[in-house]
Image (tube, rainbow, N blue to C red; front, side, top):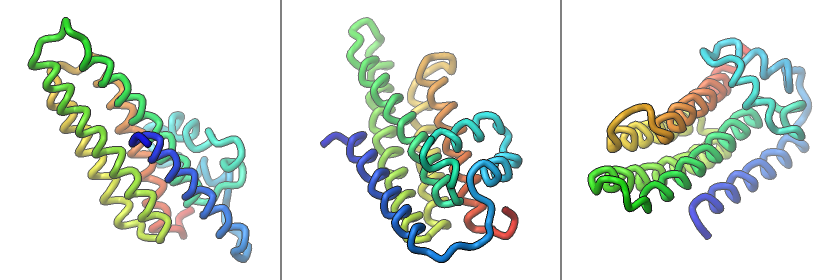
Length: 186
């Protein structure tokens, strides 16, 4: 099973486990769904993207709590990372590229694999209610994508654009996880 498929399987299992736990938990009066999404995203510098991402799960978003929103944002970030990895693999095989650029792409590929692994670790940390560890793993994923960018010259290529989106998606997840650490604000 390749890394991307493994990550998606971990995400699916995490969401199912959280849904089962949430179903059995006593109900309390806290904002959920669209109300919670709007509150969380009001602090985001990319508010429209934040709302779009957190509303993207047609089944969970309408009733989501903070942990659900964190998992949704991580799933979107993981999908983005998989897309970057696919594009990187395609570019590595381009024989017309300078060998130094191909080496930079190969290095980038390894860093993207690290970022995907760190997203898995973020999900695992969330599932055991360790939001601080989740924050650390997300920051490590961001550092990995920064290292990827540094290994490829220029900033207007497809990968640079995709990595900028990845950063925004990870920052949305960080914002949601910060809310998990401070639920009274929501």
